[in-house]
Length: 409
Ligand code: CO
Image: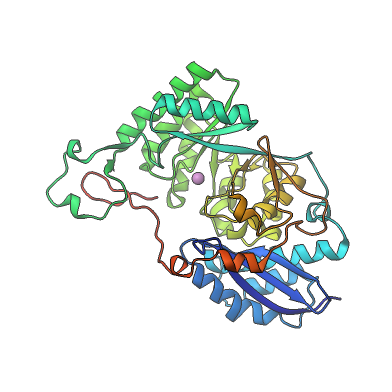
């Protein structure tokens, strides 16, 4: 039996955005790694691991993953927040890594074995003009990506109008904004369907396309958008509503058959369970680390399987190669896997993680090593970190409507 001797976190990437958890044991050379990255509240996650969840586990049996998850989940009484979940998730991944190493098997073998040869991913294509977007999509198709997300520039792109043409009241420009333009629902409803009309005209229906609304629209306009996009047969429409307005998915279902993907902001089972049980969404898109790791993702995948909902685990650009590996192991075994969001890293970043997932022609491949198959070079990780940069407070982009109102991101 391997006993846990220490749980710690190591910050890396140049900007310090990655938080890697290392769970050490009393067995020589036996440890596990997990991802607890949080771009906005990293210090809070580190404190949750190093001052609360980690010390509690010292001396306990590393093999009791489910017990550590369940007892850790309620150890601060309050639960289901993104910070605690991320801390639990990082530890959970590390414990699965240890279990795989002890068993001499890749984690996906322990979870049920492979349901597929590799993990298909969707790419992020973008462009500020339709022509540039089309070119980017063609490039990803040629690269072998089976599904491609199409965006007109940044999130909300297609919905921004120049501030001077927005009819703004005096003083609206005083609200801080990340974008030079202002966001306008009607402009979005005009331009995004036009984008898909153009893309289907040029590319045909053989290419699988998605779009991410990133919650920008007012709920009734989200219903309208899903209906307007119906003729273009999307693979899915992502984050069409904000988590606060998911009840509108019932109206969307009544109006059209555009497939819906939702969940990257979900941290609480009560957020996704009704949507799955009522079959109001088609793809669940949580981030594996934000729901509590591999143990939680497997449970969600199994519930979704019963209701015919597929998985499409989230991978933001702020995510690290360890979270990607954890998602890949769940993807490999889940029968109701749909698609995995892509992520990519620089060669210098990947050097920190020997055994990282191999991304080739739009598919992720695990290796045959026991555990998560990914290791962590602490020395290189520490050398890469720019401490000043990592201490800078970080906030989500702020978009505004014409009168200055903040748009949900
Ligand atoms: Co998204």
